[in-house]
Amino acid sequence: MLYSKIVVGYDGSELADRALQMSIELAKSQPATEIVVLHAIESVASLSEYSGFAILSRIEDAKKQGEYIKVKAEKILASIPNRWTLYIVEERPDKAILQQGEKLNADLIVMGSRGLSGVKEFFLGSVSHYVTQHSKIPVLIVK
Image (tube, rainbow, N blue to C red; front, side, top):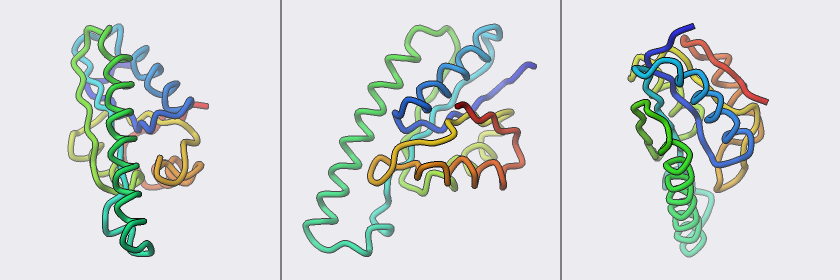
């Protein structure tokens, strides 16, 4: 099947790496296929249960994780001829994947069946479950 735009939910986990590799394999044969990598970090609003220093610490951890994700994804994508974009957004991962997929008119969403937890996002399968249940776009879950 041919795709013009593939959105990949990416949190740096092993399964997210597999999902990114799968999207690259799908895109390789079609140089016009664009890969959009999406990483979501915790928003300040979602940290209301924490106080003072704990909030600052969580935000700092999320920023560091976001930078790590950016560098890791860029290294993986640097060798492909396809156009690609990396977004780091401040949003719940499940909502962010659905919103970006629809906003960008993606043909496919690719994501791991489970991801990292806590500050590192992608809550152990709940994100992939939510996305598959609510997406109007085909979703490929990688194990």
